[in-house]
Length: 311
Length: 302
Image 1 (cartoon, rainbow over the protein chains, first blue to last red):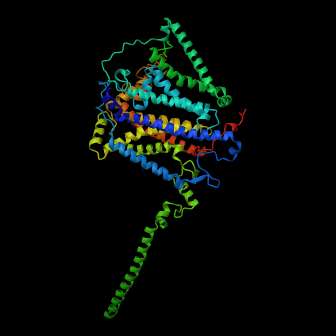
Image 2: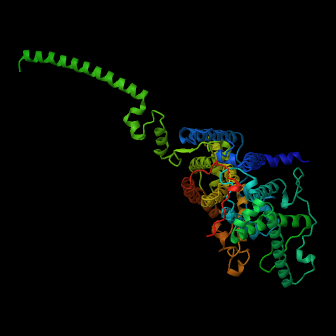
Image 3: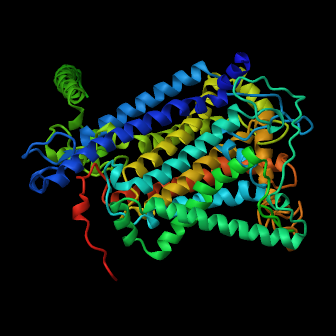
């Protein structure tokens, strides 16, 4: 174990946010899901007891009849905002006094650092460059992520869980988001901690060897099937992708219509909503991990080869 | 004019002076007393009343309401909110903290602009000057840097919370979209700022980032169908971003203008819309009473 190098990476000032994410994201996931579980228990109780459901105030927080349902913003909210501002300022002060912002040598186009990495929040996209060509990893994929996020509320036809934490009422929506969110963060962590010179894979703590050579020959899927002609590769790739979409779509469909509640929600979903959901789920949530596995486990570079683009 | 009259006149003047002095003394005492009162209760002064139109002395519900509604900085808040909405556990405070960080970044950013020239000759030296000679310059730069990183994290967590509480659901779908745009703007703001110190770190990060733009389908010279549409390194989208075919002085200037003017303006506009819509869509979403599966209304066939 090269602890020194690991420490150098982890303690690089610009990587501190990533180390922070390693703690913050699990904490807030736990914090949110803990409340979701409490609400789910309450929901279960109320579903079992319709009489109680009529009179219950339907929150896990304490409440007595006669208590006001609202409080004044001045002072009850403003004091919290003021306190939050003070705490954030203090935190920022301490952080700024103890850790200096990085400044390297003057920019030099003739001296390429190896590896040269994007800012930490874009390292996930840079890591995607291993698995896809730049036009997809760097342009199409981010665009799809943004559009997919914007489409999120419009394809979620579930009327439950508006304004409170819950897991059981919204497994599909929360599950999809969690997969995407964790995938994004995982790619950032891999790109930061596990990518060394030449963007080669090094385990955390493995010394970066600038002279390392990897004798791995990447293959394309059509080659494995012995297809050599351009037309053959194009048509084969097209059908491979269509088959993947069909299989993944079928799998997702089975998954999101398993529970009775999810079937009810599915019935409320219009065809266009469902197709949009399927497209983004297949492409981003299944397609990315699938291509990552193809590349890492089977050394497959492209699935679909055409004269204009490769996937 | 005879002496007698003059003499009497002299005594009269003296008496008048004494009278006036006495009068002035009483007046001064009154004025000082008044000033003392003013300092004790500044709310009663004309100056105070001209600034704060609403009396704040007594904490009646009316005063508390007006304190928020009649204040330009606070009026984005409603007068009253859901009693459970003030719990940290519900909102995590991440939206508010993101906004506060944006203010911190604007403030430190404006101060940094006083010491910075966006030119290849000066930029890097300005950072050295800032770090070694400007009083508190290093602290200023550090705060700007770390606040930017922190803001990226708080914006992500804000989005995470909104998903977990289902707050993007009707009627807040559009505001969620505005939020996604703000997320993108946050990342772009951070990214454009990365190049400005003109050091190796920023230069190569931006080189890596903008090289991807070469591969943009249709409008990049290495992207699918780009060459077929006549794209070259000198007319494609990357050229437009960098103001040239390499990351050089034009790119520095463009990053600077995007970072200091265009993107903050855009972000401010979208933030205005975001906050406005939070209010118009019925305030923050909860914590709302839980809804039961058995209460789901049947699908409306339109």
